[in-house]
Length: 148
Image (cartoon, rainbow, N blue to C red; front, side, top):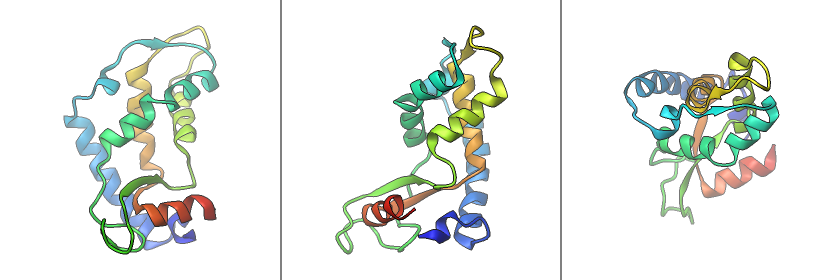
């Protein structure tokens, strides 16, 4: 499982290269309510990141990034070897919350200046160019989350 966190591994670099191309293309074509939301959020970086992490950011990742039909780690498909489902898994180098904080670093002025929610979430998606999102089967995902 450590190979999934190793920036020099082929699975890490290949997944990230494909993901960067996907993000660039998809951001230019997607019409998404979270990315279009211009309601302003204010407060501390921590408050804003925690608020977005509880729903909008998670939902956006699920809608934005599609899963493949095969596990990135074991190459099995759903229905094989007790695999119930395929799931998205952030590389353990950055959590979803980490990426939200990084996005806010680029946009934040102070806790009284509102930032449009959609701008934060657009930047959040762009920050996914720093770490891959893998498609893992439920078995590998559980091992990955509990191993590192």
